[in-house]
Structures are given as C-alpha cells and as structure tokens.
Image (cartoon, rainbow, N blue to C red):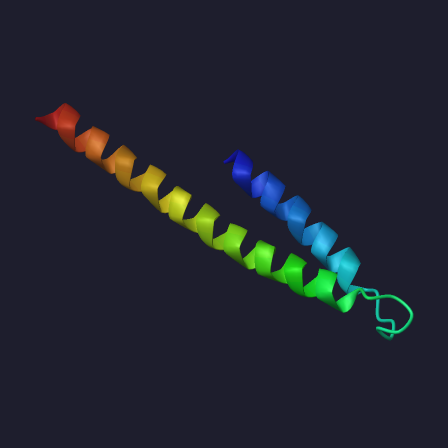
Length: 67
C-alpha cells in the first residue's frame, strides 16, 4: 500500500525532529515535535482503518463472486 511508504517517511522525519532538544528560550521546537507526533498518530490510525476497509472490501468482492 502506497500510504505505508509515506507513513514510513513521516516516521523518519519525526525521528529526526525528536533529536533536537533545545530550551524553548533558544528554539521553540517542542511545539513542532508535539504537532508532528499528533499528526503521525492520526495518520497511522487512518492508514490502519484504510487497510482494514480494503481487506473487508476484498472479502466482500470474493463473497459476491461466489454467489
């Protein structure tokens, strides 16, 4: 599934972003890290739902062919 490729890239970017650990007074990176984590988790959930839906649709199509 192509979405998994992009999810992997998002995880790579998130991992790179998490390497930064500076005080907020110097660089306000903590907020960006939090937003990235939130987006990654939401995307991971959406990809899982889409994969399940595709699997279910495949099963329905198989069942309809047998009828």
